Length: 158
Image (cartoon, rainbow, N blue to C red; front, side):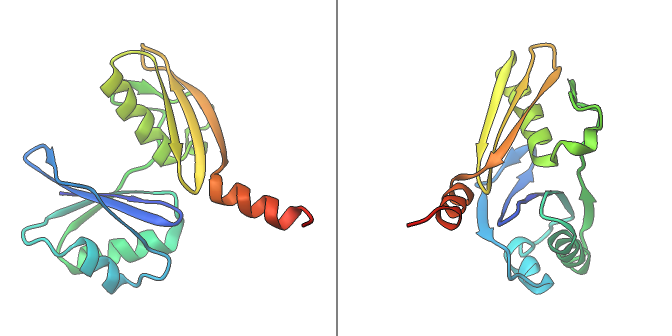
């Protein structure tokens, strides 16, 4: 199985075999076509399933799905839900929490085994908290460092 996280600017992926993750790989995907997705992510012989989470919108995910199917793989998209794996989403409308933040909150809760706070810094900077009982308390999303610098440079005088 191949686990894939399609972000706004980068894609991260790792194979999972017998419950163990191979080293993670990453690349910028902005100009990729379906052939690029297939060549970069799906070259492993015997790969049967691709499980993907995406905040990048439709085109990259559609290209990955097409590449997976062309390679003979089952394709599954993970989405945000009201509850999963012992964690309850703190948003009244669970769909408003990005799937990347949702999966990170679930993973952090299981890794920490107690109340935890998740920080992630990429295109966006996010902070989410989860109580020890698995209740997601919500969080924040802010521009990441590059977006903040660009905003300051374009919005202020020399």
